[in-house]
Length: 398
Image (tube, rainbow, N blue to C red; front, side, top):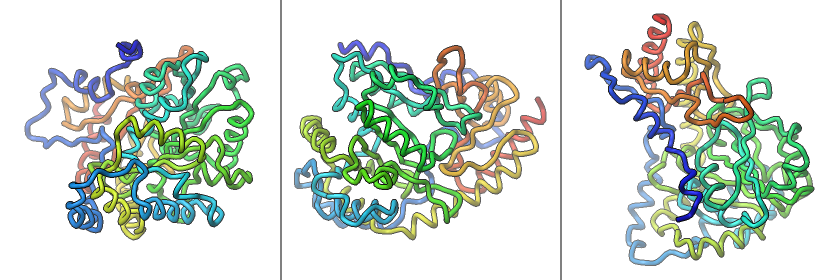
């Protein structure tokens, strides 16, 4: 067996199920789940109608590169959204559709990491656990960069020494961040691109929450945007990942894309032809419809904005909580250990959150996820408000 498999940790939701085992919440309270980042707003009809209209495409093997029209729609969206120079993205050479960014974020490590070079894969801590598993199964050592409040919930990249950067083959970024919602600015992204060029590593930028932001006038910047601002219009060493799951409330569609450095995309394409994960044609047509429309995305942001306003107002008197710049999570510190908080809240109020320590790893004597909880504001407004009242009553009773 691949020795990396033995190093894989249980997924956070497995740990959560074990933590809740044996608890009997009040039967008079309906369960409310705020632990998983699964959007629960309706999937827009333009997506479902396009999917249904092209079901006959199930009779055809899809190509790994995807429909030219889909890649062109993605290139147009990226160019407009991130103010890229006109024509700087070649849909033929710099874009690939993927079956959700989860599989692509995992697969990129398998494609770009050379295990014979004692490689490191750097990642934020807390993090999306796929990054760690991808590193281990690619034969690399995960290297965790703590995301602390004093650094705006991003790693202190300036404290990483040159020897570590020299061993780095891949840096995972997540901006807007899961779980904090923090956003990296263009200057920070630019400095990382310069580091990648100096030390010859690849930046994989997970931008799956980039379309969920509170201020309509300030959309989060992206990696390709920073590269173009530096004059790196070939996007050398840069690859970004986007998804329709959060943006368009279509997690079951399993649709996203990767874009960036043509050399990396070509090698990733070669890997994927063996990986066997071409996107079905009906999914491609539904994705084309989604990337070609912004009205449903703006409406989606408005729904989250309303929920943040209501829930923060209710929780602020009892928890140190504030609305993030982006994403759909709250990331407050807890007055008791995070695992105790989550287990007792479930047992007493039938509300399920995710302990922050299930999203992080202890490193150099600190655990940046400990004594925090992730609260996913994905249910409808009334459910989120009811959950906030229950959390508030629980905290007041501690």
